[in-house]
Image (cartoon, rainbow, N blue to C red):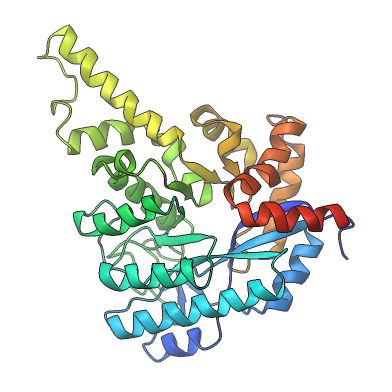
Length: 354
């Protein structure tokens, strides 16, 4: 049944481009995170959006991404995926946008695809996985890419992948680290946390103030572990003295080190967090304690997460008492419109007509 007045903006909505699963099947890859690739079509996406009151969705290619040890294949898959997404957007620009996939970990290849995706295909942002063959985004090898993303004032959607070593097949649950528990449920959120810690510890967040970083799944465990992440990042960067109690420093030294930790916390507060697959009653209090309502975004994770999950979590959000009407509207629509200027025009026209 179609919703009368679709109004939500879904920033976490995946697609499965033609030929992608066939190309990966040839390498023995049939899914990610312990789950098989979902069935998907543009028609399914638009119908789901109508039923769930979603005015517009930002499409992205989920894990496992495009790199499987072959640079040529990665470039081909990334380009074909981006071109397919751009065609979908051109058909219904008021309802769809897309994040460009880059053929990392090769930075030169990624920079070429980034230029093509932005300047020719007019991508709305970029999706980066939490790690590429075990290399996290704070790796010095990626500095040139982040400098260019900062120059373009890009929206960067940081999406999890399984950590190296978490993709060992166990029965039918390829990607499980605990027998029977897909890594998409646990390991993915931990790897998002690793990726954010890497960005903070390397100084990348500080060097790229014009990038708008958007974290999947409420930031993994970032809101809950923010202080530990800030301490760990400063420790790794050599900005605080190793030592659990900091007991040998003067009061002034301790004050300076704590100030650096809280400066790291401020970087975490400036990130954007989508609420995909996150139960409001248990996750939102920590998330709201870390960041402002203007930094929260709605996402569905469709089709990797079934539509029933979206319906359930939307119902849970409606009953959550920690959001007033203005904050809920910001989360579900207004914050996303401020991040994506094209949708701010296209989707508003659609919303006005609905």
